[in-house]
Length: 165
Image 1 (cartoon, rainbow, N blue to C red):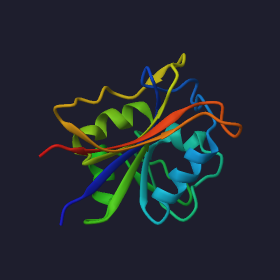
Image 2: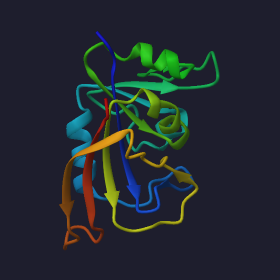
Image 3: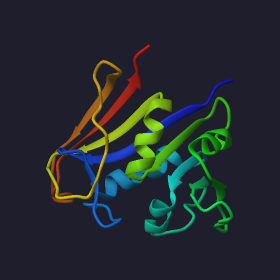
Image 4: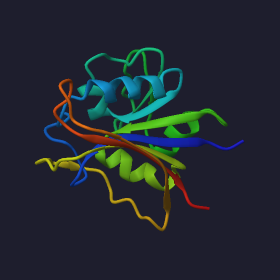
C-alpha cells in the first residue's frame, strides 16, 4: 500500500497564507470544513504551525510535528525530524493531511496526490505564501463557490485538485 498524502490550505488570490505566524482571515465555515475533513486522520505540520494553533494538539487527530531539533518532544504529538520521517508516520492507504506552514507545503507538494484549497477572493499582505499550482501537474476536479454574506465578508471557493497521471 502507498501513502495517501493530501494538502489542505486556505490561500488568498496572491497565494498568501500567513503573516507573523498568524492566519490572514477568519472564516468559520472553512474552519468547520477543515475539522470535518481532517478529524480521525494524521495531520502533519511544522513546529511554527503547531505553535500557532489555538488548541494544542488538535483533538481527534494524530498530530505529527516536524522539528529540526533532534531531541525535541511535544506532549501529545508524534515527532518527525525530516520530511521522510513524517511521511513514514502516515499510515499506508489512509489519507493524511499536510496542514502547513509555507516551507512544509513546498517540501510536501511533490509527495501529495490531492489538494484541498480554499481560495479567498482577495489579495493580502503576507510573509508566507503557498507555491503556484502547475496546471500541467494538477487537475481541478471540484469547485464550490461561496459568496460573501452576513456571516462572512469574504467570498471564497473550495477547490479540489488531484495529481495528473
